[in-house]
Length: 412
Image 1 (cartoon, rainbow, N blue to C red):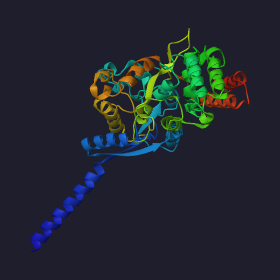
Image 2 (cartoon, one colour; image 1 turned 180 degrees about the horizontal axis):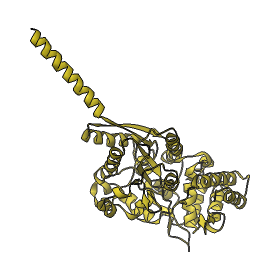
Image 3 (tube, helix red, strand yellow; image 1 turned 30 degrees about the vertical axis):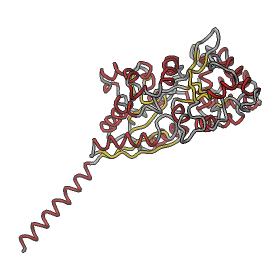
Image 4 (cartoon, one colour; image 1 turned 90 degrees about the vertical axis):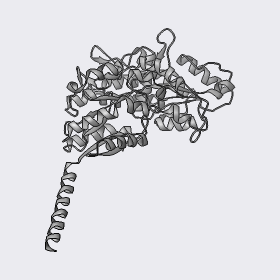
């Protein structure tokens, strides 16, 4: 009896020790993602569940914040001694993050297969000064979405190919009483407004920086802001656009309260979903327009990457998770809200079926993506531009004076 009891106690002790060892062996990674646009929170959770199923010794803690909080959350966590192993970062941040040692240089981990398979333009998302600070993950630009039924009702046979045509078509739709404010934009005092401004700046052939100094206050940069103001004060743009972010634009458009909207890839399938959209089946998409004699199309580089923080205690596991999330099979499986970074994905039926119109627009838009400035002082420049846009829309400053002040406060 004593022998049996001793054996049972030994077995229980061994089992407890094994459990402790297993618990100690489990690696926990903290990952910071965005709570809007591109991949949905549900998609990211599903991707992560797939990774954890294949790696039972790794646990991923996911945190989602709005885009507007993503940058500061990353930086503050670093200052507090870490907290995140994997972070989602915007194309405009590598210069700052590299300068301030926020992200690990992973140049030596980029394999020949990655280099050959990923679209060349996608690499600009994660590189600075010749080094790679992560893997591109979200390949994105803004497109012009339009309501096919509204255009047909107004006698407009084809969507606008220039910004001047967009204004003329919007006026026709307004005059016909089809919708009061035909265009919706995301012009809140946030990065969203700078993305719309960048799209227009690229159409008008402008430059953010020339010879190391701000140049957006001249030429195409000035014309871009003048266009925004004219659309706003002329009653073609929904006046609430000055407070809208991208989700507001989507909601207005899919509710049938706008004929045109500038937004990211993710809106195409959501606005075409009859379960949540009143305009499903009538959603058209084309590249953002150009300017006659200057450009055929316009686009902003809104891509994002995944990187390993320099404070991560598990950099190898963090990189393994990133390579899974950015892998071609995973991206192809979840290609309805964000298009893949892999060139050969665009011939895969899993990606193309039902998205032919979007992919046709992407073929032009992704090739025309215009970068916001790659500078460690980007945050200062962006905030100055956001203020200039708001002041111009509200009429408290002229576009000329507002952009001149922004140039002086750009940090350059």
